[in-house]
Length: 532
Image (cartoon, rainbow, N blue to C red):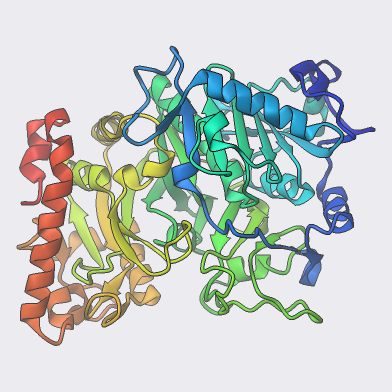
């Protein structure tokens, strides 16, 4: 059985995917919810949200992600960070997955990534679960209905959570597999129901393709001033550092919350929606995001709820601390209609410092910006990846190593070139701990972070007085309206300054040790900015 609207010349049969029990092409949100409820994939929540759980996988499985070794990418993939899979193993995986799919019901969404038409990537998502189709309709961009009749996907992603890989046969690590084949323009996902793998696969593609065209691919959120798209800002950071929260500023226009490109014309969102963490979400602190959790079609992932009223429990992390909601951009009232902005005037690098050492904000020179971009110091927060149960200090280069298929210097050099060409003030913002390390100190107050960002973005912070940090060499403001002076000097927030000094020395040595790997690939000005 076939239903829905599709280019008749590009049905699944034409791609070698045949003998399926039913195929539903490009169903809209109500039909996808109906199908998901009928199949018992979840329940209907308040306001028509869809409540789903993802089983044992409640976050990404980075160790189960592979790139197929082929001639077209052999010399450009960062193999130290991307596990290789042999083409023959991928072919076996593909054949076995297609055999597994026969007789089954599948949902196809023809979508694209990239709001800039010059850099748009058309993709086809084939999902075993209807709610995955709903999720990806939110997270990617939706072509006009009439476009579907001639839609030509460049890449295809097939996601079968019920398919379990065989490591010996398929050249992978476990029953879970995410395999990217750039030569065949095909991605296979099996053994995980975590929906985030769908969107991250597409963004990994764009993160590889765009730099080859001179376009900077960025794991970041972005916004611009009300009525002035040229006054744009980007926010780099791993999951849990505040990208979504801080870019959703009601006083500014949201361009996007997770992935962007920076071309010669400015910045553009890859996505059509947002994927926000909901742990400890409060209406008074984040009203726009909170409101999406009871809107029609929002996907609520791995949240405990009252079985009768469907009221969500934002504090119960018994399933995972990585509980999330996925919703279209237009559910945020101040979202950009175009998802485009000018060249960023401010670049924010978000770090979640579990050591409690870094100040809440610091101004960076261009060389320091590249240093911290390549370092990507932060903490993995609980639940973001399998096995992470408390903040774990880490260095994730480019603030997005799991999604960077090319060597980090490629992205670092592109960033430096863009900053040099267009100018931008760069800031390092710590949303982690103050007054002590994790377990002793407390999380940086969000109201203070917002006040500092507001002052940074409107230019007032740049005009004030700064001190040079003796440990890290960057400039730290000495005052900001609405922020206690004490908070701006983290050493003063500790009960024992000598304990702070020991912790700071430890972090400095970690920075130096980590950065040694990049020294052979960087220029002298960045070497001079290195922390030692």
